Image (tube, rainbow, N blue to C red; front, side, top):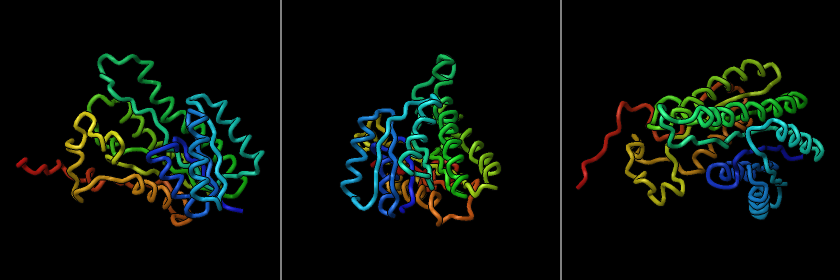
Amino acid sequence: MNPSVLVTGATNGTGYAIARRFAQEGYDVVITSRDHERACEAALRLSASYPHVRVWGYGLPAPDETPVIELFEKLRGHGILLDTVVLNAANLGIGMDALTTPIEDFMAVFHTNIGWNFAIARQAALMMKEKGGGSIVFITSNTAYRAIPDRCAYGASKSGILGLSRALAVDWGKYGIRCNCVLPGMIKTVRWQNNVNDCRNAPSNYTPLGDIAEFDDIANAAWYLGSQQSRNTTGAELTVDGGNTVQLYPIIPPQG
């Protein structure tokens, strides 16, 4: 039987690249999205490329815990006991003025990024405990350490994920369950490719390596932490941002 992985927010971009990376390694894959049809479409697309593995798509609305419990019951019904969970989906909390944003909008970011992720991680841990171990990978952000304008809830929630992951690594280590974090920086998303809001000229582009991440860079990091390649690693962080976090300020070349 193949090992198995569940990836949240995996219909495109980083999440789909993570799902594809595990499929390449022979993992059966569960793709989730808030949109059930999009999850099923992504599952069909991945299955067509990797017919040697099984792929499922499920709608998983956030941040309610009940659908999470129901999903894991369905997985058990299919005979799936997950080896790995990668928590990629997030509320991006864009455009939140800290002086004026409604408290409901602020808290919604935490409900998704921390509460919902915890609900999924807990159900996964109950399953992994039966198997004698497993791996939970949180996709957080280098904004957990470096703030950006008008994203107060997002940055704070991403910092919170680091603390949550460390706490769960301690609590669940005795069951052979590892919890780790990937911290991406700027990624070459569709928004970046289309230079929305001039994002291709933002200071985050000027990294010590002279490049920012592709989707596959994040997927490779998630694969390492999610697989037995990192069997003795837990409570750790892997930053994938071209070195952006470690520099005091970006060196921006003069415009010619």
